[in-house]
Amino acid sequence: MKKKICLIYCGGTIGMVRKSDGLLAPADDAAQLISLAPGIEKLAEFDFKFVADIDSTNMHPGIWKTLAQTIRENYDNCDGFVIAHGTDTMAYTASALSFALRNLNKPVIITGAQKSIFDIASDAPNNLINAAKVALLDVPEVCVVFGSKILRGNRTQKISEKKLNAFWSPVVLPLGCVALEPEIVVDRVWRWRSKELEFKPDFDREVVFYQLFPGLDGKYIEAAIDRGCKGVILNAYGAGNVPNGEASLLPVIKKAVEHNVPVIVSTQCVEGSTRMIYEVGHCALAAGAIPAFDMTSEAAATKLMWILAQTNDLACIKEMMRTNLCGEITTM
Ligand code: ASP
Figure 1 (cartoon, rainbow, N blue to C red):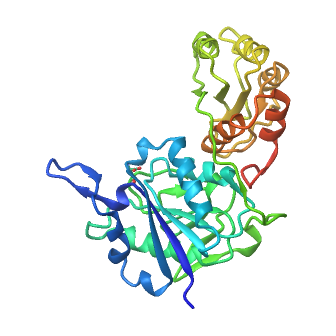
Figure 2 (cartoon, rainbow, N blue to C red):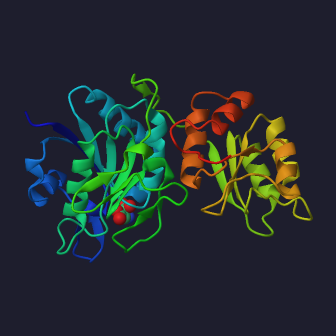
Figure 3 (cartoon, protein in one colour):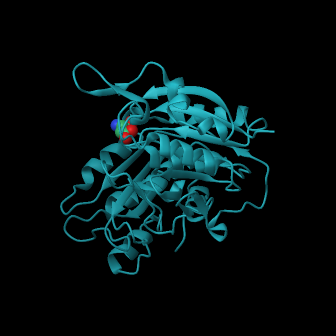
């Protein structure tokens, strides 16, 4: 009997058409995707689910929730899931779903394309077919399959808006690659202790993210705290370094902590970890900041949003942020 894949459509270039003004915009008939990837129907039976038809620039947590719900509703009757998604926010969705759907026992594979499936020389048919092939393997996690790469979803970042290998996973090795066929390095696949799906699809949007630059004025961060934001991410320098001199951000970290608002420190170094080994990092830690270690900024932001939807207890948030929940942290 043929295996069954649930193909969830969420928009993106993969299914866009060029309109009369020359701009790419969502097509009307997304279900055509399957017929435009020749041979894909030989791999499995496909159950098509429409979730959204957006440029993924317009992604938001409400759609993450619908995606997670669609997967849960079809969990028992499908062998694997493929999500067709825009590339711009794919790394965020991959991270978000990895938290929303823990203890997976089937693959959830996200893919997209740099060129629409309606264009000549599109990468869409290959990406879709390879995603479907990986969705039939024993890879029980949220992955991005794109170009020749098979990557852990919550470690990915989009690095090119034109190359066919648009994604990378800067800190951890790919789970595999697409050669003649997709090849998985079995030891790199995440294995859960429990196989009971843990479904927590909510995310809190009351979060702000600041990329540090020399001179960033803490008063703007303070204003966000005064307006009721529930979590702050400071994408800091190097090993988690935060200014403590003339343009010190320590007062704002202290103020946030006093208001029970977590301040997460991530790093702008894509291959870095917030080890806080410098005095400047250590001071932030002493003021109450929480290190994101080597999480991508996409994973750090979605993880904080996900945790805040569950608790506002600072100690609990700290503990959860520091815990490797689904492969999003490697080095502390
Ligand atoms: N703007 C598009 C999107 O993210 C880009 C793409 O899909 O490649 O939806």
